Amino acid sequence: MSLAPFVHATRKKGREAFLALSILGLTLGSAYLFRGREWWIPGVNPLLAATASVLYAAFVWLAVRKTVQAILAPPTHDLAALVGQVGETRTRVHEEGSVQVAGELWSARSRTPIPAGRQVKVIARDGFVLDVESVSSE
Picture 1: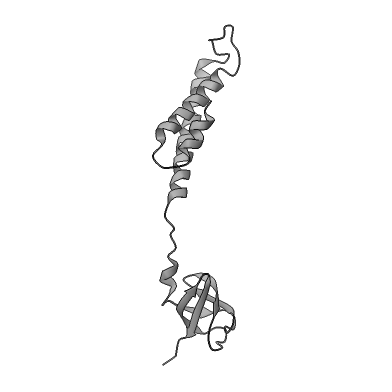
Picture 2: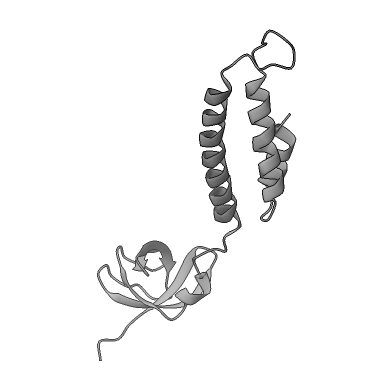
């Protein structure tokens, strides 16, 4: 009863009406889950059903909204900003190696051999591999 509006609400931002409809459907469904004396009378205490529904609704409302915000948030990493930054080699770098740049460990390569522990400058990026050159100590 509330599955379709719930799935619809989690797909894009700004669909709070579908989230509210989903919560209402789940609340009504849970209140009438157990049969009362008559078909239209819920089988649970209305105060208990209302309290549980309010707590559930608050949790689902916050959780789904924050989840959708996180999914739709723009990436926080700007890989293009790595070019020009200075880092340090962690292993010997030539055909391949590792460098620490911007607080992260990256795969790297260079035209000339660079020993571990040297300062390097990023001159290009090819996917997740950085092209580096040694920073002269002049």
